Amino acid sequence: MGGVSLQESNRLLLLFIGCSVFFTAAFWILALIYERARKAAQARDESYQASIQTLSEKLVQTRQELDETALALQTNRREKAELETELEAIKQQCARLRGDLDEQAQQVQQDSQAKSFQQIQTLLTQHPTVRRMAETKPDLPARNVVALFTSLDNLVKFWGYQSIGRPWETVSYEPQLHQADAEDVEPGEAVYVRFIGYRHGKSGQIVVPAKVSRTLPPGIAPATTGENVASEELLS
Image 1 (cartoon, one colour):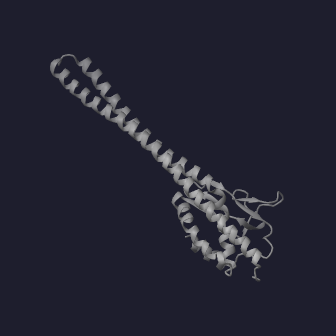
Image 2 (tube, helix red, strand yellow):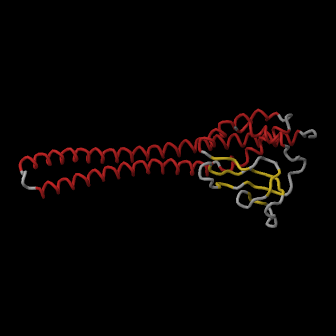
Image 3 (tube, rainbow, N blue to C red):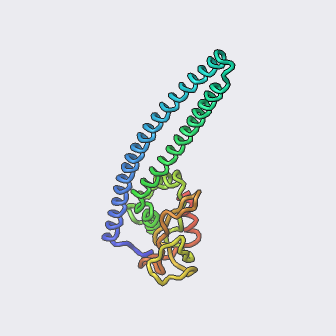
């Protein structure tokens, strides 16, 4: 790569600083969303636990009544059968409440992840390209800012998301995975990854497709196999 003008260095430095500020704001938004989701889940948990406790006490009381009725009215089989039916219904209701509690907790976690991802989606799709720019132009003084994105990579892994493509690598265009900047790009056509995409690791659902183009920005060379491996190691 050629030399970099002071103006371009300042512009890239401002870009890195802007990304850092955006990441900090996104982090606090994520913390706020998580705290609200946690409190909501805690409130639901306390409500369900109170219901289960009430039903458990009623279960014990019903069992005691069943025993007393069986001793006092040994000949009244029909009443005993009705009490047993009520006892079974209470057991089933307890089981349903426990199942609802588990589903609610899982739903709260999924909703929290989805909302958090939406808040920092722009940063997630653009920061790998900014990282690549710093790696290919080591004379930039803002190169050290790349280390700030490590926690962001860890957050994406914790959520279970996987990246689609690597910045500036050559790939075959797949409409399911890529979003082209031109409508006439054909499936299988060689394109460059401008900005990576993300998909969920377990379900395979595409969260945001990778943005691709037939060309790269002026002065940018396509990523080589070795560079792709190095970038992949940084993200692993």
